[in-house]
Length: 478
Image (cartoon, rainbow, N blue to C red; front, side, top):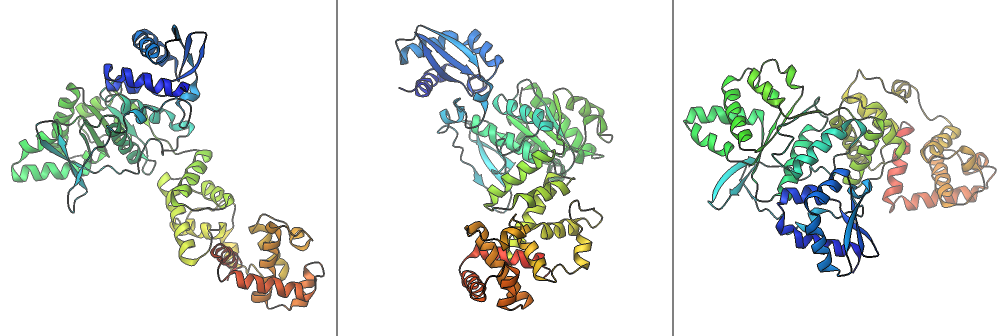
């Protein structure tokens, strides 16, 4: 039996004897590294995990290992931080709880809510639906945002533990909603019997008003105070709404005293929430307060690459570099520029280019100065006048040189751009085959004719080529 299979067997043996929250926290990313003369070496991702397993569960682990392999006499632990990485050698606890984590919810017609059964009593609680696209795994983490991400992971593994409440703040569009909903999704996977309630502050205020108007305040209080995890988005919306603040204050107190997890997001730190009750501000700071910052350039590039995988598109890295270099306000804007670039390209059958992306960015913010591309100069000056202009444009598009296009190399990565170049000079500038041949190192007119005809034929069936040619034409100002 392989070492990892032995460890899975051990985990399945001891899983029923340990509380699920503790099991998920301390055994995540662990594995059996090797067996040396009767000693099983167990890999753990952190020194905290090593110390905890050694102090609390050493006897259980050894007994389970000996049941799986009678040759094991003792155990020792080694710390390998890479075990915690996604796709690493450490065992992902989600694998062990996969079957248990199936949670059936019923979507309420015409309302973005779900109704979840609560416990054996059969009661129900409604919650705004968590977006399944949001997860902690697909939140791209940069150096500035490791702390918020780590705090969310800790809460997802042990709700109601040390980070309670968890207060996440940052400017609009940086991913607060992604992060808070991702924690909710992760908690539901880790603890399928828990009731998770996600609501925006604006929705909470609306429900308070309706409850007062219909005299259903008791029912309103019940649905919020019987949850295990309460997620409140955009708490700054409570400003100057005294009744809602009071109701939230009492809800907060009851949940906190019951060790229920509370997670709050806002666009500013607690100390700057001037229009909120001082009692609320004080409670927000009782747990963990973390700030989401705008990602650095490398992280922005990682986000764009991940979005390209999600959209199932391939975009020139130079274009992504240009987007990352010119979007400085929010992750939402970063994704928005990419979405528009992809949509325009699909609708017009061409690939995104620096020119097309620059126009999108300028359209979104006319005052923004574009870095690395003079869009006004390009608009006012005809790009293509001569065959050399076309050659330079095609060479730049394919990351080649004009010498590559004129030369004798017949590799596909050079031959295809060369044929496209000849096709465009013929069809857009109207030059003769003989003259085009002269521009390409004295090639005869039949060679140029063959290149033009072949390109025209391929354009009837090669979608990728159509997009490339259309993109180049756009760069030509056509």
